[in-house]
Every structure is written in C-alpha cells, then in structure tokens.
Length: 198
Image (cartoon, rainbow, N blue to C red):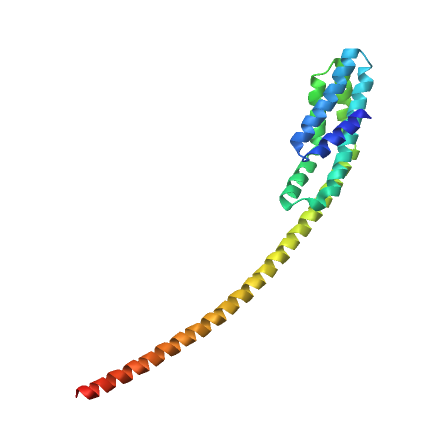
C-alpha cells in the first residue's frame, strides 16, 4: 500500500521522534483523504486504507528502530524509548486531527478507526512495547558497561596515583635526608665556627 511505504520510508530517513511521527502521519492521511474527496472516490475506503497503511508503515518503522538500537548512543536510546512509549496515542491523536479537517464520511471512518484501535490491543501498541523493552535492555546494558568502564578507569587512576605517591614519598625522603644532612652539616659548621671564635 502507498501510505504504508510512504510512512515507513519517511520515518527511516531521519531521527525517529514524536514530532516526525506526527508530521508524517498527518501528511500521509490528510493527503490520501483530500485526494479522494477531490476526485470523488470512495472517501470511506480511502480513509480506512490510509489509516491502516499509515499504521502499518509506523509498525515497520518501529521494527526498524528496534533493529538499529545497537548503534544508538545512550542519549538517543533514552529519547527513542520516550518517543515509542507515546507513539500509539500520538498516532490516534493525529488521526483525529486529520478527521476533524476532513469531509463527513472520512471524518466518521477515521474517528471510528481511532476508537476501535484505542479499545483493542493494536499491532502498533504491541510493537512499540516490544521496541521499548528492547531499548530499556540496551540502556541497562549501556549503564552497566559505563559503570564497568568507570570502575576500570578509577582502578587505573588509583594505580597511577599510588605510583605517583610512592615516587613522591621517595622524593620527600630524599629531600628530608638532604635537609637532615644539611642541618647536621650546618650545625657541625656552626659548632666548629663557635669553637674557633673562642
């Protein structure tokens, strides 16, 4: 279906954000409904097809995001998880926005489809939950990896500091020895001079 492919390709071209989802869904469904109303085609059929196609395209895009999580940095993962958690609600909200600007037939069809999707467990909801779970696991692993790296770095730093402390200790001992030597020599010279002055 055209709307399915349009949504999937558009979402895969850039970053997967709620704003991009909203813009894409709105453009795709609006475009299909407006074209059907202008040409006089079955607006009911086109609206239903646009809704289903956009939803399927979004599901495909979510699957793609889930597959790509290995390459995301932690900040991107957190953002993607937040976006996926609200994706279905955003899809339905955008569908209702398009419905409010459409003719009566398309308006009724889009609102009915949104109502049905909200009341049932949708594929979109399931895919978003699964992707969110995958991302949460990746975040957990990333956090553990960061903690290990930090501990390793701290261990190396402690080793370096210990080495520096040991070196500093040696230097301090040498300085103290030199100072003590200097004091003895100075005291000895002072006593010698005092004896000579007498």
